[in-house]
Length: 569
Image (cartoon, rainbow, N blue to C red; front, side, top):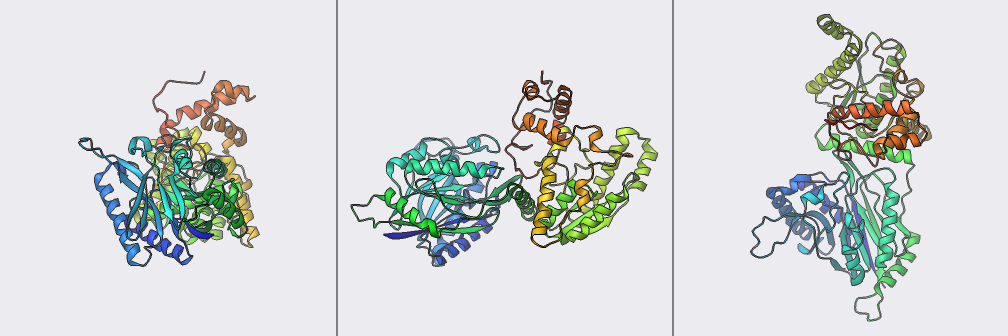
């Protein structure tokens, strides 16, 4: 039997950076060749980055992508890598019939390169139009299957959603008979999705009676996080190899086949048998603890946003509370503590322990710590406006927002909003105050999970023999905005564990009032929370974007009208 070496290159691309993306293709192909690979496959839309959204509709962008693709093929040949079959994702164009006057529509395309030229093209058949995806309105669907011949192996190629839907190209490849099903993916992270991917790949492997190699991109792109986690399963669905999550990685695996001129060859059976033998030497990265997985997703999302948008540092308000403490720790892990500017902005109501906790945190992570009292500025506004009550409380938050934005403008930092999903759901953020910023790391993390992540991060530090980044008192003390004497969040909100239960059911599972009451929840609590959520849609629309880590995040996933008179009966 021969041995076909297959490399899955899970890399981090940036939308629109054709030069850097194609340079990465060449660099990772070289690594794959050095590892003896006959075939290297990259994630969905590698050349262009993903998702490209309406950039796909620009003919100039499509021309640029095709030019970059052709140049990449030529460069691979020039650098002695032409004998490796390289499969990449890009944006293509629908093949038009003769005399068709309609403009060509873009396609989500997988392209095989070898010996300096394009060997095959495959257009994604199934175009998702749910959750964060709008591909159906952007791309034209493909209609033809694709089978590559690589070192005597028949390799079927599909793209992401094609394996999520029954029938279509996978069914066609089943009839054609393949030694391997290759899947290019740009599958965004959400908690628990790894298990779903594995189960789906198992189903398709049994369907085509051949191993499945699943390559996924990694990195942050706007509010999406891609976790990698590329893997291979055998024809029976058993895990053979798995790459680590949230890092670029080259996963190399061997598929054994008989020579193509052997008339007795039973390709799928031979591939399955070889895959079983290869299990003993395959690399299987360990699965992550759920809290570690979420934490690393947040770090990846922030790191990607900072780096890809040209920032070098971030600035945030350090209140001494749990939310700002967790955001600061995430920031330090994402870009280095020396690139984090933490600003304590005490008012007349700020407690000594909060200021001490903020200073302690900054020292632990090595942040640039500054203190800017806001009392003189608040006094000046109040002297002119005579504000009281909520208006006076919100004024403090807005003055703090002005301070952070001023530092951003003067020094070039990215301002981080520190609010969490629970607060955002019920509108407990001050518009143009603590809601200011360019990115919100905890936007899709509810308050209960904030505490869990803080404890996980501190425990991970202890296990590594390091100083925990978050002061224990920031985790244990009652949360408070400290905008009036003795204020705590539970003065006006249900306990967070109860609030988060209601929010999970109403927001993420779209349960109505009747379903919530059937759970045994208190009617007064349900009515209050639902009213707060419904009234806060306008605020959420103006909140910064943040990394999606749950099945339903505020933003692309949940699109409700701001102006509506519907209320749950």
